[in-house]
Length: 297
Image (tube, rainbow, N blue to C red):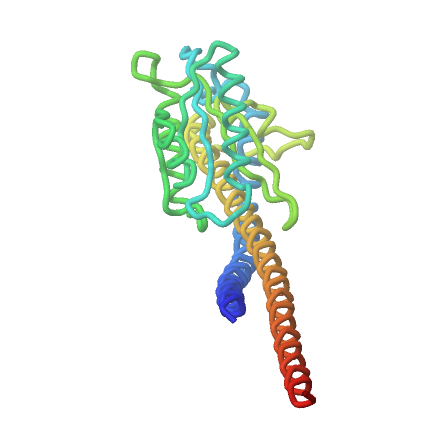
């Protein structure tokens, strides 16, 4: 009887857990849609600023900007690592950190000094636990990124990129983030953010010939920082959508496993109850036979 009570308690506990994971799955499913909409909403601005930069670079050869130039700080490379604030998302953060560590190793093999910048509590905790230096950290917005957060990150990275070696500047900036492909597929990407390469903003199509006021150089000085921030914002949105998709799959898997475990415990409980009933019947039959034998004597 005690074994039956234990199994019933386990069944109740697992069912309660399944309700929680099912609720988390439904929340993540609804947020995936919102995250996809946010990515789509940011695309027109990104396309237009890229088109403007393409036109500026194509029609005004003389313009220049420090963000387009290799910096004299050759041995320090910034690595922006985009993780999540929350958990219950399967291998989402593990995959990002694994790719970031592989990049850090490659940079060290090339004789460069990696400088980590981390987004998300999970990544911050991972590096702190291992007593690893973090140059700058940001958290509290990874599930719903806003452009203000991208601006803060972009300004800090741009400032460090423009600093000299003596000031602790960096010569290049890489970003490790997760690209949302479909609900079933998310891929970790490594991209160089700075210095900007002209082929990133140019294309085979002939760009329109804009009139820039007061000058093309002034427009470039304004557009390039905004372009960097818009790229960071796009990466944050992609990572947020990927996080929700990973969480939805992880919670669905947890719910399915919980339901299977309930079935296993239910079968075990029924087997125990059946064995108890069989034993009781055997005892009753045995007692009846004993009474019959004693009566016959």
